[in-house]
Amino acid sequence: MNIQPTLRIVSDDVAIIDCLVDHGEMFKSFDSNKTTTFLVDEDLHIVFYFAESEVENKFMMYIVDNFTENQDCMALILNHLEEQIKNNNYTYIMKQAKSKVLDMLYMTNTFRALFGKNKTEEANELYY
Image (cartoon, rainbow, N blue to C red; front, top):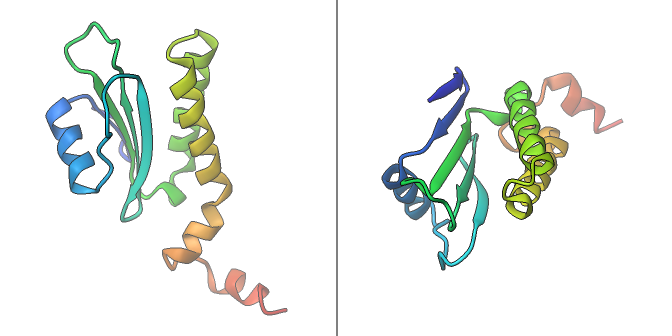
């Protein structure tokens, strides 16, 4: 499901498991709720596993395309995570995910440099 053109939510367990395995991020155990975040090229993936979920799909994944350029999508995710924390829904893993999203936001300029997206003037400022 696309929330915005650059923000997707995936709830297909098979697709999420394939993505986790393909990128070496598969969980080692499934006895408790878990979350992980990882990059695929410039896209940020945030995956949740809900061990105690009553619904059929126990996985959920957010994908923010080109996350350094789509901070509005990151803000939407943060708002969602904060709402889940406020409502005491999977508080521990929501706080973990929120912390990781905040870390990625704080490091946006670093990742832009890593991806070669710094503007020339910004890069030149480092030499003065």
